[in-house]
Image 1 (cartoon, helix red, strand yellow):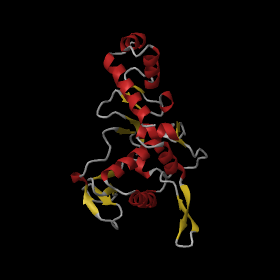
Image 2 (image 1 turned 60 degrees about the horizontal axis):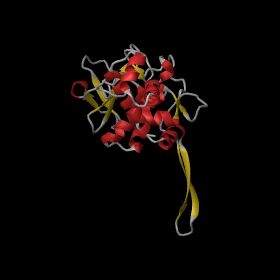
Image 3 (image 1 turned 135 degrees about the vertical axis):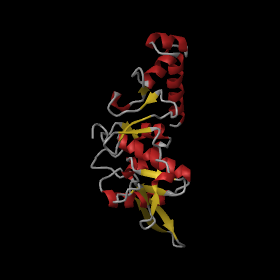
Length: 236
């Protein structure tokens, strides 16, 4: 997969883009161990948690790939829907058992109605169906559920993996694509990295007209880049 699995984002940067703290991002990528005291004797016990993001072979424990980024996005939004992290861990485990490989939630086959998680079910029927995860194999009709995050994440066809992400959806001005500018956010029509626009904006005393003149971009494009960079800076 072209650039999709290359570790290109620090944990801090990945967290800012997705909206997670750097510490949480590192725990999701690497797992963690916690020592605590238990019972009246205060005996020490160790709690170990494996990584949430199931990756391929990599030694880059604190760097994330584009696939890691998208899977974190999916998991975070599922949590926002009310799913517990433990339930999501179980769903990921079941999905990997069914399909093999890794990054199961960074694929074009997951759906939700806001209460349950579904995945495409291959069968011989002419009616598309979904399989409810963590249900023992219950089927549902695909027509009643919309693909999750399908609008803001573009999937490569015929591949099931993501190609690009619009992080300010429904606005499509800014794009993240692992094959362009080393995965850094950029203006879709101009290909200019948003961080460079913001740096110039600050360097010119926050005079947006100078930025638009220097870079030959519209005021709306400049504002979109500046607002985006300010948003992810606040998330750090």
